[in-house]
Length: 113
Image (cartoon, rainbow, N blue to C red; front, side):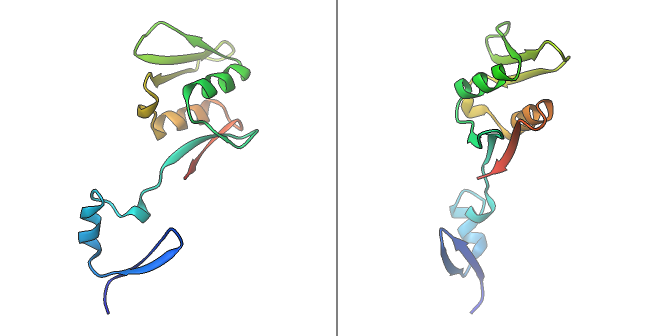
């Protein structure tokens, strides 16, 4: 009996050829892929769209810039910080999340889902 034990969705199973299964799953093992989410710390709310994010940033003093039609940009008057995000939320990646976290200490955090 050789292989790798995989725990997924509450079930443990033996995978005889883990590299073959990884190829079937798009080149990565399902257990190794973790999606990152941005969480508003005060309410533990996962930010699922730009409307929610814009309201949270607005309550923290960030103002929206409308200069570039390809980007969502936010600026805070009391700082030199600028947050630039892709217009399409599906292109919102962990690097954008960490940019928001760094510029809003104690307000947001990035978590694995």
